[in-house]
Length: 375
Image (cartoon, rainbow, N blue to C red; front, top):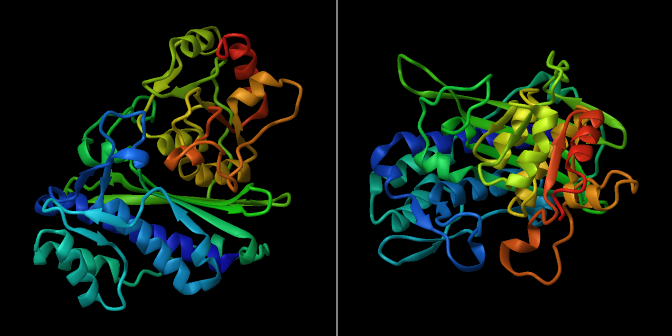
């Protein structure tokens, strides 16, 4: 367990480095944007972009973790395909080659012959990172790698990664938009039960150094398996407010918002990125994240779900909770695609979701939403 978690943490930090390099090099950044189409397009957005950074990060995580644990290689899945088309119409399967020179040559074919940009990326990709976390290294929980599956969201909140500002002011600690909401998410689930068992969230753009104007990141992890839990975080203290607080998507329905007003008052916040909204719950900035639509996916929720479980919380299927209020807690599962749909929709969280730290908060939210959301 300690070895797998250490590998995921190191891979997430390399991913964060790649995200920062791509964002900080202006000439490189302009080459990265490509619009998704067809079955790979998230229907929530008019323009949903796949960046080269997304593809590279996903392949780096697959390569680095698979190199240490070959038995996991076939069980590592992500949001992106590894095929990238450059502005000249050339299609390339992005992969980490055996040498930095070979990786640079491959990337050069994607980057319209830009050798400088390709070399910079290849150098970051092949950089050795050994991230030491004493708490993670002390873990003695045994989980067989043969039962593990991994979901990667290489850069959650891609639109904010591309267009987001770095000077957005937080509201009570929560950023409504901006670079802070762009996250690297790596979640591990049990291939038999579908339950999330380990999660790593890396926030590449956590804090900007005012002198160098360079971004610094931070990461969080959590493990929950067969009743045993461990995390880099302590469970947040209950907030002093009487009202509950929730974070919502800007596209959330008016029915949901109006139903929550008596419970939350003005303590309803907006934020970009599913992963970041989960993180707001994990950090105790809000009591819950409520989302009634079906446009989040397994790679969005697996990592934060595992961390929430390690802290005593969880992520429930909203529609199932409201349809069967006395049927137990239907938490999200991660091992089976949905039948009858194509492309990314097979892995959508079709019932919406509620992420929570306290089951009491969950009960109050479900009570407020009962009878309104499903009509």
